[in-house]
Amino acid sequence: MFDLLLTHATVISMDAERRVIQDGAVGVKDGKIAFVGSSKEVENAASAKTVDCADHVILPGFVDAHGHGGHSVFKSVVKDTSYWMPVMTHTYKNYLTDDFWYYEGRLSALERLRSGVTTGVCVLGSQPRCDDPIFALNNAKGYAEIGVRDIVCTGPCSLPWPHRFSRWENGKRVEKEVSFEQLLDSLETVIQELNHKNNDRTRAYVTPFGAVTSIEVSGPTGADRVIAPTEWDLYQAKEMRRIARKYNTRIHTDAFGGMVRLAAMDKENALLGPDVHLQHCTGLSMDEVLLLQKTDTHVSFAPGMRQVNTRTPVVELLELGVTVAVSTDGSMLSSSFDMFSAMKRAQAVHRVASHDDFYLPSEKVLEMATIDAAKCVGMENEVGSLEVGKKADIITIDLINPRLMPRFNIIDTIVANGSPSDVDMVIVDGEILLQDGKAQRVDERKVLLQAEEEAIETVKLAGLDKFAWPSVPQWGRTKLYPDEVRFDLEASRRDGNYY
Image (cartoon, rainbow, N blue to C red; front, side, top):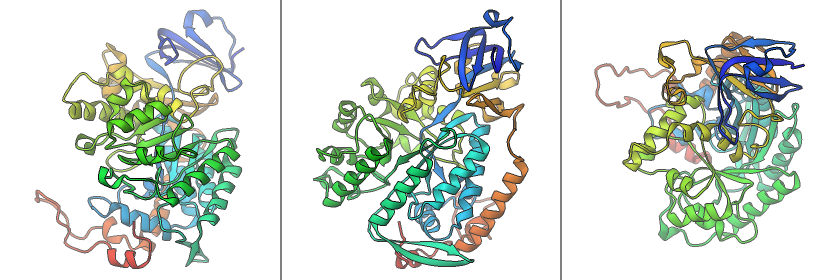
């Protein structure tokens, strides 16, 4: 007897044979997939709950291999500015209450749920915030309430150490200096408290801000500066490896051109290998691509227009057999946690960058959002495909709308025209979390309004009013020129928290 039986759908299994089953069915028992095949085979099977999914596609839930916690609250605030990173880093380090992370976690998880994401990486802040465990614990609590599978990623932010952070105590900002060793203690607490908790829907990975610390941290570095890792590069890698081994967990970090070469020079603790996945990877040289292949290091990337000029070498990596996942990078106005949009952009951007309209067929892009992404985060034996014995993480897509009809080339149609609004049902561990497009565990309106209230208070605390409520409209202009200073960059530098 099944606990749940979904019937009469087009089942895109993403299994080893990549079966697409017309009039297919998926059966669930004890939170695991117990059957994948034709509806006829189970037409007389007993089930506690049977759902007729005619005119739907059944897919494994999307796996978002990289996204940021915090951004969802600020997506319509700090925009149209080259100061985005310093503004956000300063805000994350100084102006967030402990409760912020809980309300933001619920908002992010709800957006992912509605987008069909059943497993999502969550890096806390722009640079990871890990000076106290409470931030990760509260954010994970928010995710747990929604029910989405959560991979909490936190660790050291950028140099220098010791580093200054602020906590809000009794309504007052209290600045503290935190040593690298104190941060490591906090990181260990996060992993102890969260990894494989919440009925194993929560994982925790070791996440330094960059694979190495001595060169550019958010973009490629010229070859003339890529000489040798510093003592600090080696020390950070050693500690990241120590903690990951101690708790049998994985490592996730950013990397850009130059970093892979430097990391590989560390013969003992290089942050490379099958237990590591690197995000972004723009500007890699060909020798770095070959290093990723040699070490079986996985890669995730967030497709955007900047990839046209400084791209992740996705095609080269794939041709060499490197596992590559498409990711959202977080909830922002330009992207959001929408994996449908990420798949579309990945295909379009890399066709433009490669000057070839035939790269990244839709089938490959869908793999990069499901089974390849699951491998990227080390969960390919648990999620990412519809196979007997795997966790029952399933989504259904309603095809009865003009964008998805008629039903020719169904995978092309979903990748090119699919939208979060088409996601009708989301199931995690066999539990229905979204049905008929509505969240089942929470009052969505309450989640949204409480997140908005927290966002407004944070904007006021951080002095971001001019970003949130610009005083000069831009009607009739062909280029945006702000008429006011929006952020005191010099004050941020003096405060010791400039990015």
